[in-house]
Length: 230
Image (tube, rainbow, N blue to C red; front, side, top):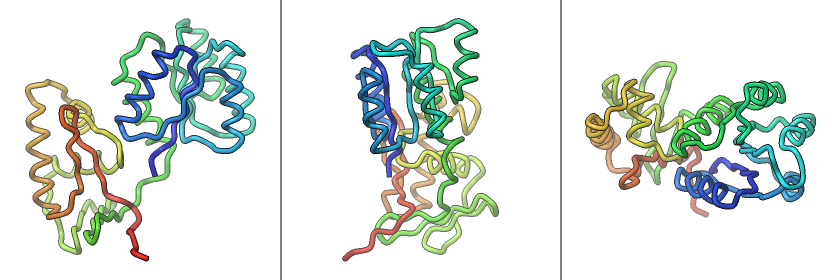
C-alpha cells in the first residue's frame, strides 16, 4: 500500500504543488485548507504522515498538533513561514519529526518526507514478488536471491538496490541515489546511476522490478505480498 500523507495548508498554490510532487513520488495524498476538515478526516482514518502549516484561518497549527499528539502518535512535519528559532524549538517540543520553513525546495521536502517515513515505518519485508518472480533481500547476511539463485551484486549495486527497496513504490531521483548511495551529487555522474540500474536489472532477470520515471529517476515495484489468483 502507498503511504498516506495529509497536507494541511490554506495557500492553494502551495498545497497543490506539494500534493502533485508527493503523488509523483508515489504517495497517496489528502489535502485540507483548514483544521476543521482535517479533524473530521482524522476521525475515520490515520495517515502515515501529516504535513502541517501553522497559521491557518480557523486556528493555530501548533495547538492543533499538541492536542492531536495526546490522542494519536502521527509523524508530523511542520511546513510554515514561522522561521524564528523559538518557533522551531516549539515545533519540536510539540513532537514534530521535522520543521520546514517557507519558501522551500519541493525536492528537499520530498527528501525530508522520505527520511521521516523511513524512521517511523516498520522495516521492509525481505521477500518481494513480481508475478511469479521472487526476490529475497537479506540485509543481515548481505545476500539477495532471485527465484532461489544468488545474485552476484557488487557493493555499489547492493547499495542502490537497498535504497530502492527502502523507498518501495516511491520515486528515487538519480540525484538522491547519488547522494545516499555514493555521497556525491554531480550531474555528470548521473549516468553512473543508469549503469548500475542496467546491471541490477540484468541480474534480476525478466521481472519488471524497477520502473524508469523518465526525466526523474527510478521506482522499485516489487510487492511484499504475492498476488494469488482466485
